[in-house]
Amino acid sequence: MVTDWGGVRPPLVEEDKEFLEKKQKMQDWEQQLSSASQQAEALVKAQQDMGDTMGALGLAFVKLTKFETEEALYESQRIRAVDSKRVATAAVKASRTCRDLNTQTVKYLDTLHEHLGIMLSVHTAFSDRASALLTVQTLMSDLASLQSRIEKLEAASSKVFGGDRTRLRKVHELRETIRATEDAKCCALREYERIKENNKIELSRLDRERREDFLEMLKGYVTSQTPWIVASFSVC
Image 1 (cartoon, rainbow, N blue to C red):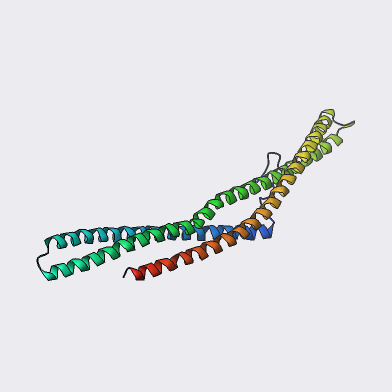
Image 2 (spheres, helix red, strand yellow):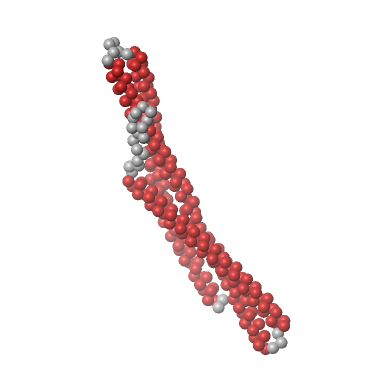
């Protein structure tokens, strides 16, 4: 990229290899989170559908049981009514179990959605860092361009006997601009370093919390499955 004064602006390149590796890992992690989150939503939907289906089945058999009990004329009809009642009871219990399981599934797998939401803050932090780096590099490019202009003006002025007052005055003005730009660069550099340090701390914290949260999620999810398995056998 070329500035108005012919100076070449250095490319926007992040040189912190450790940060770049972590940034790439976070991008990969976000993709995995997104995929897992979609699968979790599909699981919740499937469990909800199963609960609704078993509930509807139980209700249908309750109505069938009532009809067969009231209209039974033969022993075989009464026996069938008893069997229908057993199926109705089992289906209703299964429906309740599915709903309870789904509540637990949502509770534990919601961790996926929470961490996916955190990625928005991570992107903002990365964007702030890139902007801070661009500011530093832009100011460095401006300083190089200003210095180049001064050198050209001084060279041109030296060719004039006694010096070129107009050019010398312009050089003085440019030196004042350089001092102000140098101050701005120092401030921008301090801000960039502050953001870098904050990124390092926050990424370490996020990595630690992610391990803890997902360990708790897996333990809770697996534990919640045991009562459901037991209950599934009990309704049979």
